[in-house]
Length: 150
Image (cartoon, rainbow, N blue to C red):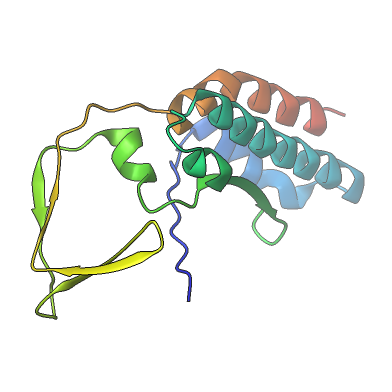
């Protein structure tokens, strides 16, 4: 059974949050425009993140997805790979040990291995999601502002 991991960067912008909280006051056409702006913004962020990510095997690049939920009008650009946060933020050398079991189960390249601990080597950060959002942030905000203008 395949596990899915999600890594996303949450951005707190007062301007953007203010506009989103007021969305219920707008008519249907305006709400649809705002939803389209947020959805397309999430797609642009995911696309830029795919271009910026390191390409050792291409698995991380393929795991970057975007989605949109109408219920709370939220767009997501996320990396579904279990190592995405290690590449985005970097890692100090650490040792992973099992919490409840005696050994760790590691699925690597189609092989299952068991070990008492795993050493995660030190890596410098190679951000891809944060720079992708920062590159598109002003355009997303401008698109939302255009959508709510009468």
